[in-house]
Image (cartoon, rainbow, N blue to C red; front, top):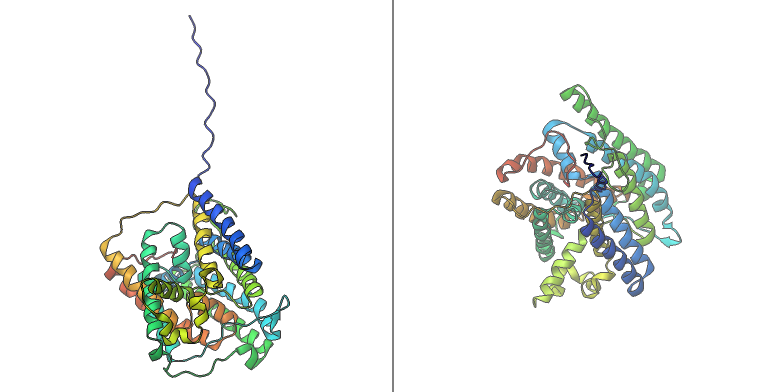
Length: 406
């Protein structure tokens, strides 16, 4: 007697997606775009989408400023810094000509040009420490939250707390010594400003190469840091892809909003609105006296808030598409304390320095602002100090950049 065994069909290959969070993120992105288009404007709806694309870009390319600086400080690995210099070089070549003429796509445009002074240096240094203790910069905090990092939720909450404290303290730090805002594009002219910026980027990139080869005898690759091939929809992306995409999306922001991409002004707004809901009156603070309408208007009308929330959802979609959305709720006590202290330093420092790694560094340099060139060395010095402090909070100091949120 013979028996036959039925051949069962092979199971379908697993897609490796987190389907539910991916669908939720996609639906919220679509619903948000439709809502903003109908209630605010078509431009606001598109800016929401740009924010979501920034979240996808940051997550898939792991374009965190914090870890790139940390691995250079700790082990002279400079691939992340060189990617930042590439991003800045592409950005000034795209931004400076339009800023020089003052218009783009039929509307007036302005860069982020703020007063260089003591508050910028002090705030950037504090922000740099906060980057390393909190575990991320401003953009890194948002895309890590969207990617499912529960520790970064703590950092974000105290980022908002620090922003409120700085807004409350505005009368003090706004009187610190400073000079009038300086636009290098307007002061020097387009071509001298462009050449000077490109030269500095080249010198910084060259210095990372020399120091990295001196330490290791070779350069680390700018590849994705994983054996998986790069995928546009599922990641991971090479750092170069992230550099190009961030510049393109920042330029889209300039064209749509009339100013570059920013992040942290929304945190002071969210915190102040939260205090209003609890019965406080932040409208009496000197910080809001210069622009009270922002505080009383709906959050949906604030471009930075809209793009920040879109960014979180874009990062959520990217994490789910990569199959990496898996929140971990247990956080060691020392690490939790680092998130609290780091978040407060991030929020307070960003306000004193007129921006964060995006508004003051990325968009500030692309705006040709002198204050951005004060921000960079001060924040890097603070970051180096933060790296030295990380072990006190039980935080790792990596030797090679990994595919992480920060």
